[in-house]
Image 1 (tube, chains in turn yellow, brown):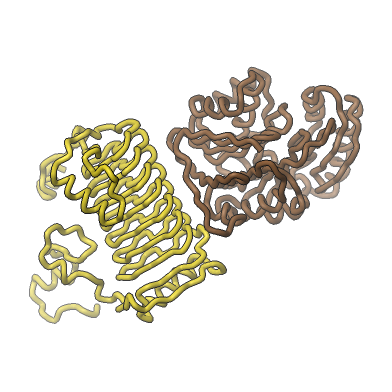
Image 2 (image 1 turned 90 degrees about the horizontal axis):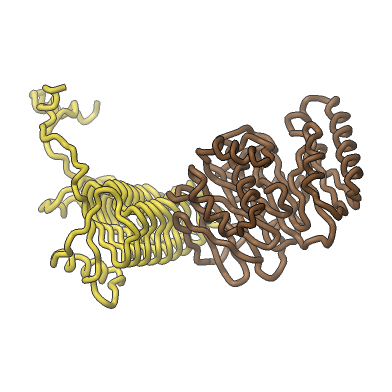
Length: 285
Length: 311
């Protein structure tokens, strides 16, 4: 029971037992306009890396687990720029990195590439398979070629960018952050999306934004069909400004600007929430 | 889960046996139960290549008694070939329970195949002038090694690594399936078909044969049924998306074509690499990388997508 407070007051005992109601802080939490955010840039135990220290890993003869273990070992030695050569479509590379890092993949990755990350800037000079950037908390992932289905599933923060086209169910269940696609997206994109923004410069497949709770989808090309409770909404100046800034940042701004984008939001017809506080609910149940 | 792979060389032949072995070995993690190959070599003029199994591996483990039974079945097969004026030009007992024949036959093979398959335990895996269909328990390297596929030259091939979800682990439920009675047509499938029994009863009423209880066999029978109605391969693939329920990505190969269809939800993966002289497609990119280690552009086909390539 290390770390238990010496002070035996009621408040401290309650906190030690995890029963406090204070607001949790930390960069994995979605906190908007938090002035103290600057203090939360890294986890306390994150390795101190130097971006100018660069090294390479040849993944050719290694297993996924060995490559990932090597990335963590090199970060422990202070390497801030790691280049992975010959990934050859391996699954699950670069997952679970929770600190600052420049990670570069010189080739294509398989399923669940760089999922569960919080902080790194990743560049992939190839294609990725299904579920790239799943559950990313923060950071940037740039993919130079195409991506598979469930791109950015359950994304919570950061920018996930694909210059090519992506598969079906893009941004399924996303809860924050931005998914930016230079090409087209497949069917059921934005399915059950809860928060965040998705930008597709090309066309979208059928059932776009099906059952979305909230969040915003911008489509530059045609939409095959909208899903249940996904509705079109007028593009505001704020949308235009955000789109211009974001797309310029990644060099994906279309020549004709951003005025042609269609904005899709939740119609909120499926919202059947009650307005009770948790303790009020307890009384009813 | 299952893994599927296909490749087609345009206008030239290549070592498709070893290429498909590498592709399927890279997909082993998607299904270790059995592996199957449908490889297409140079067509034999006027002759047919017949791949046949006369027992399951499970039967072979039952003791020495089965050896006499197997010999009896082989003798019966040859007797029935002779009855249909089919001349055995070559015979290769590749495994104790699997044989390869080259037969000269002028007439309709359908009647003959039906007659031979009436022998207990006998299944004709494939019949064709270019197609060789090989399937057995074990991973790609084991099956390919046992059947001597490494040196096979041909234009195109499809293959499958199976994780049994809908039926038993045995050779009869392994892929690829031959689209009986159409010579040289084979099918591999990744997925589950949910209106299997409805469709199967409909097909059986039309007189089609089912050799297993594996849902994927339906796709082979369905393709054969469409071909018998003069429906093109591309239209058959397109029609299947409407008529067959469930999740599927499947590949069909004929003597000079390779095609695929994906269901309306795009629920099963497929990665496609296309160039002027080679098309390779597989459930995962690692499989394509097994034969093309250099950097290439690949795409994920979308829902309801259908494509057909000519050799």
